[in-house]
Amino acid sequence: MTRPRLGLLLDRRPPEALPRLLIAAGRWCQPVTIDSATARTDAILTTAPVANRVPAGMRLALWARTLEELESAPGSRAAAIVSDEPAVVEAAGDRGVLATTAHAARGRRPVSPFVRERLRSARKLPPGAVLGQTATGWTWTGLDSPLSGALISTAMACAAAVSVRTPDALLEALAWAAPCVADREAASQVGAVAGADVLVADREDERGRLATALAGDRGQAARLSWAGRRLVERRHDRDRSALRLMELLSLWPSAGGCPTACAGLQLATLGTPDDARIVLRVADAVARLRGDFTR
Image 1 (tube, rainbow, N blue to C red):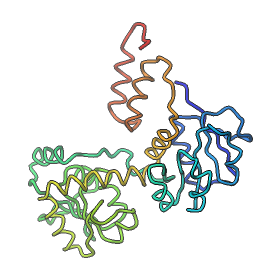
Image 2: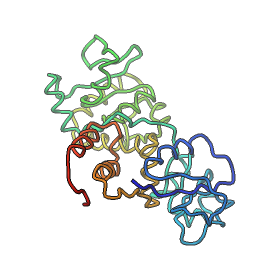
Image 3: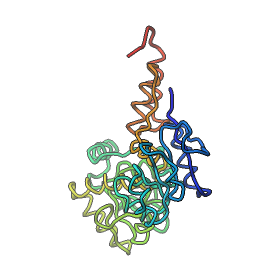
Image 4: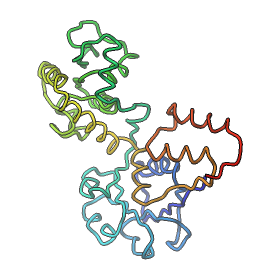
């Protein structure tokens, strides 16, 4: 598989978040430091002070940390705006790519409301089972015994709603696409918008009541389920940010006719994690084939 080249033309040492994003982007392209904008590359990631050295017609991504850089001439020209400042990314709209060090979505698959309902039925849980985080641990509503740590992820993947009090737990629940009711401060820390991404309440008993009502409202639960997962992918997962950057710059590797690479590339463009079972199954199936693979 041949990967396109992403040239790095920066006037300053980037913060930690950008190298982490570029490492994730290495799945799709070859990030290379260049001294001249005339070097052979397929696109260039640059900063505003040196962006005038990028030739016209070259696909351009701009690293920006202020709204002034976003509104500059290079900012207007850029196909992608990359930043570790959420306010800049939000202002950039569809062009915004958040450089984050987080990996909140890794290993956590979104579970749709329909699948959650089937999982609860299989585990003989009530249709409106609510998972709640308290000061002492996690419990199902109406049960006194706490869940063991090994069961929490499974519970998040099948709960009708989740009541959460800490930011880390909220991110994990949202990554599983669980409809959530969160502490107001926890929601603020992860960038969740009250009413759009999560419901919020400050007291534990209020969160419990809201979560129970949410579990019985399929329409609202479905909306919050996908809104929360999108928030995680947009702001808290560098693999997804890297994929978005590649989309904006149209930097896609060439499979070169190799069937394994072709299949892997198609799965990867859907955002399928490297460790997903289907990736291993496809690779194993293709490896068993024989013949001339040119299509």
